[in-house]
Image (cartoon, rainbow over all chains, first blue to last red; front, side, top):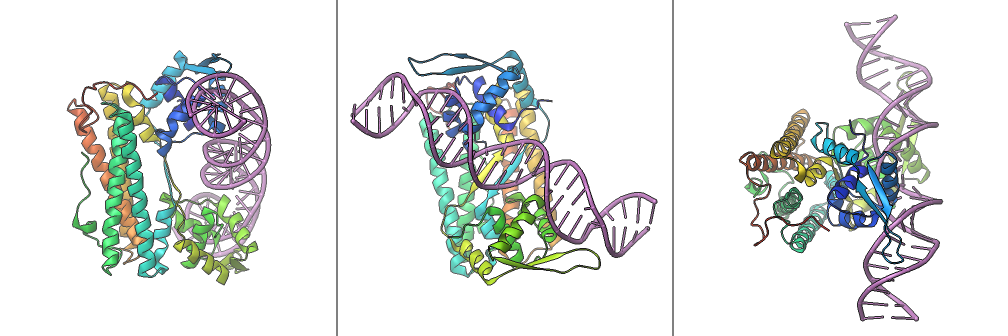
Length: 195
Length: 195
DNA sequence: GGCCACATGTAATATGTTACATGATTGT
DNA sequence: ACAATCATGTAACATATTACATGTGGCC
């Protein structure tokens, strides 16, 4: 029963991967897990000290020149706890806060043009997101056959799927059709299989 | 510039749709917006009073027998504010907290069987979710050509897509293949962890 | 009598972001 | 000289969940 806070997991994970300081962890989360599990300084630094009290990490001062710098690493207990969490069969937290979806949910009072604008903005947002993830992929140069690479694949596929879904809805609305096309799939096309 | 808190939007939306009491709003969010925008009593009741102070809603006591009951409705200012929010061109909050994805991200240290178990659980979770949404659809008997019906369609399609994506990943791993099927970068077998 | 649904509310707790304060080093 | 980056940290605020307290009315 690992009683880790969600942020603690991110921290243990990145210490495991070799990150050293709280600053490092923040930098790397901002380019990776941010999209499904963020962390701010206000969480990271206090959590690092809690983890040290619990004995899951240890630290030492390792200044770079005059820059104060505290380097952390996992203890054996930390490695074990992290590994246990990875294998645990508990329910995974899954939470979404999506204001665009909320708007669409309540959008029946909008005239077609208003609705169309809303959908168009959403599709555009997903397309920008997609471009962002593709840049990330390019920046990291492939990431090899790693599971974090697979997560990036997932993000890219997901954004593509979203862009397509809302493009299909957009077409329907702009043709003067109603927002639902059931029982057939949007645009008549089934969701694309993962590559 | 509507300065509504997210929960306030949900409340205005459901009052607009005809819900009356804080209790009603909680019931209906639990069967609908919960998946992308939840609300608990601890938010709803205080928020209703704040909205009344701001003049966006008005209320009266309307007991049912001896059961105390406070009925709310939108004022004109409330309707206007809500409509403005629907049309606003601001950025929409989009936040995801997905522990399963976090696990997959860090799963490189697992042996194939451990990884497979993780993926299988995730696929199963999406399949249960899908069934849940389908039940919802059945329960509501179609929902007609409404935008909230379209949101339910979206949820169903999305869960289907997820189940399929992870089923594909599962197949790859169970065949002894690597987690990624993308054309990988030339020269690179094992890329170093992100630094 | 006991349980469930209706109905309102608060307190404690958890979780998290933002803004700010501090200071060294590196590059322009 | 100044901006950016490295690096640590805290305080204030925002947001939200959970658990609890309270009570009516209907049903078996």
